[in-house]
Image (cartoon, rainbow, N blue to C red; front, side):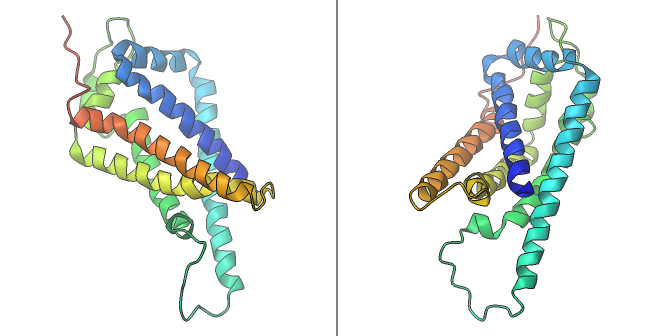
Length: 217
């Protein structure tokens, strides 16, 4: 139950975060204005939300690992042969993908929240509207093929994670049946791949030169 509920909270955050980040395609004024609205919201409430999300992430990972450990302890003898019938690749590697995603979250926070991974971020001036230049920071960050590759790989793992987790949430709550289960599984996969395309489109657009640094007069 805890894994399911914390998973839903994280899914909602991931969706909202994507909608905010996609504003980079609308130009610097949009994404910088979005970031400014978050700043005006207040540093204390914003950090309370961040702290809450960190607790949710840690609880989700902890109880997922705990469930996996309990499942292994319940099976005293290992299978002599593994023939997976219903278990997908995503469901069999939920713990692994979750741990790698945690490492990505830490790096992502260091890069764009604390701005400690790239010294160029600290030298960026305000944009013409007096907002912090988040647009240029994102472009500079994703101009690195290594950073972009790690980002896209992490989003791929997130896709695998969500393709199983978004549908298994209803199963954990006992809200599915024989007819509903395959539909929820399909909806979960579509939702997960849509998130992957959305998030990956940002570093891909930067690497392909579709989103560039803006010159100022």
